[in-house]
Amino acid sequence: MARRGAYAKGVAKREEILERALDVIAREGYRGASVKELAEAVGLSQAGLLHYFDSKDELFTAILRKRDEVDSRRFGDIDEEVTRERLREGFVGIVRHNSEVPGLVQLFSRLAVEAGDAEHPAHEYFVERSARLREMFTGVFAREQQSGGPAAGVDPETLARIVQAVSDGLQLQWLQDPSVDMAAAVDAVFDLLEVGIARPGTNQSDCIGAR
Image 1 (spheres, helix red, strand yellow):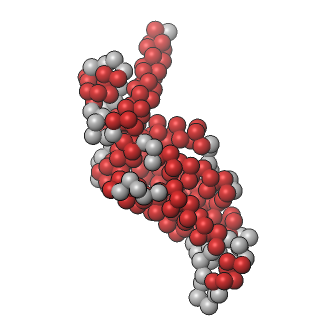
Image 2 (cartoon, one colour; image 1 turned 120 degrees about the vertical axis):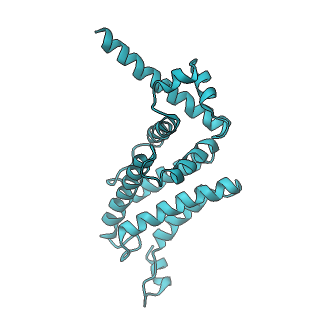
Image 3 (cartoon, one colour; image 1 turned 60 degrees about the vertical axis):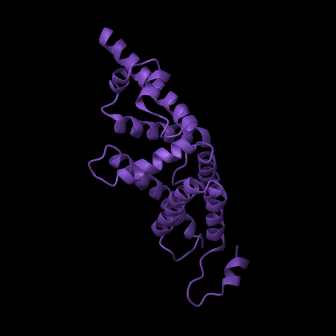
């Protein structure tokens, strides 16, 4: 019973660390969020903090997982069964919220590059996250293409990769130039999907009229 109680306390402390870390990084930025500062925020030494994680990279990866969990609660669960309108609303909402937490966007973008190394602790997280995102979009696009849209005739998974690439690329542009409106740009991509993509021999005005 004592071991079970200690385990529960350990899980609770780990959750506290991740939730506080989200606040610290969102406020101070990635560069300002050292292990020392994160440890102080939860009343631990650096060694005490890393007792709950294998390394600094493991800690930062867990922080991103926690961010995804919090975003899911805030904007609602989105899966391949939702409508395109609901998908658009939730996804654009998350992108808009990202502009309010630059430190977390910095962390995501930095780890995304480093995770290109298959040995990096965040590698599995990014591979799984990207696959889930594409599966979600692909399912919605494929189902709605059966009724003629969006962009009927274009492979749904290709459309999913395009939306993902636009979102990730906009984050890099925004980090370099905060005047970039990421949410508006992503929303515009959905507008383009609503209009449809003209195929060879198709009159674009016909596509617009069919909207």
